[in-house]
Image (cartoon, rainbow, N blue to C red; front, side):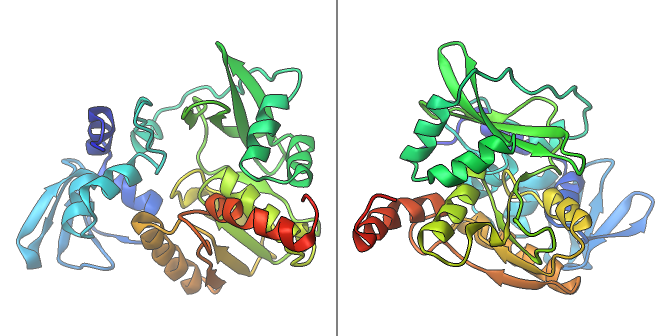
Length: 313
């Protein structure tokens, strides 16, 4: 399937320095007022004012984050475009240049909630999410339902340390619609808190449904109580929520990376693991056992768990 022109255009507009600061934290090294190199490549010269880079030792160069991913990191064109669209590629959806939009201040307002969550809970239960996990998310105010035109959407909410909503991501209950709510601040991820405030472990996922899937798998397979760890969804391959969460939870020492089993997810896991290990965290990379992501893994395992337990779960 060909990439839509809107997605490619959005990827080409992402500034290289913005990309590195967000997805490769600590990689940039300032050489002068308007020149950087990177920790990985001392001969790579980046000029932010022109959005250009030149890799002296390889006699290669380019413009912007897309050329950097293709030339320096060797990523495929499709994977690079998907990554720069925050891994939320949907063929019929208008592309979002998130790194460009991040520099613009826009008012954040949550969509108007519906009176019930029937369509959202039915959709998520169809995706395998357990009623217990759903009830927790709804009761905690991090999941609700909204209607736009004739379509109902799930709204996944990210809150700050004072429990004030600061970001939200919508997923259609029908079709393929998905997208951030205007003005969302990307450092506030979708967080399911551990029951014990002194919990020292967090599991990191790319998307809210994957985080809910990980929690459901833990509940169904009786690996202790399902709320024995924190579950944080980053809404893409986004480092900002990781830093914010760890600042707010200094007791956390163990980080489990539950990213997708694809090229961008694996690369991001390597980067995050290295950065966190350098900061003294215990890091485990835990790929989905089956399929590309944890929701696919849940859908595959659920009927087998039901059969083993001899009851509906």
